[in-house]
Length: 107
Image (cartoon, rainbow, N blue to C red; front, side, top):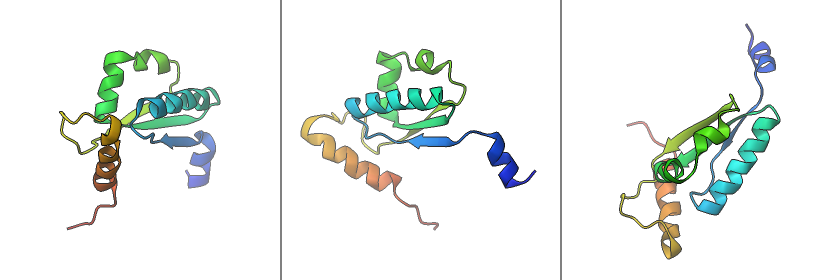
């Protein structure tokens, strides 16, 4: 099977990587829902911390269970578990994500 035939059979796939703040994540989850309703496959990439918060305080699995093309992937934000991740400490998240999520060189 050629690459073009495979691409024609599967719907486009969108990767969403929101800034790990509640308002950004909520907006991107709404966008993911709309994209899934349009027939696209969607993967949302969340920090481990954000994902755990959603598991505790939102019914993420139930909300997206009707969308077979929806996936959640996680990445470490590189911060210790006791980091507050609020207020003026938001810059820490961005800098840490830049460090842990940047290009990796082969040793």
